[in-house]
Length: 151
Image (tube, rainbow, N blue to C red; front, side, top):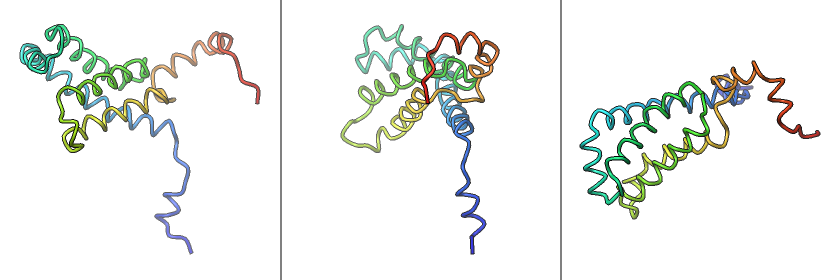
């Protein structure tokens, strides 16, 4: 006899739906944190200066823009790999500069964001992103430009 919950859990899931869930979760966090940085650039710059980050004012603007606008692009599924790679870099720098490396509990949030962004770098946005919709319009040109692997 099969437990109905186990039957549901054993059904294959859409990888594209999973990518959408990752994109939405990651995007909301980065949009929120990017907006906080954009609305307080002076404070962000002073914090970066205290951490010893070079060109703290310029880096504050860069990080805030990558977080906020990159979050919007990830949410839309447009150039997801590019923006998610930016988020990975930001989280690596955050862990190395602002967090105590010896204790995982001090950087587990940043580590989770980094790994989620890395998953999107490796997988892309999936079928529910603007990239997929735009590529379908030009799929003939796209398919002609890319080599096709023989089965």
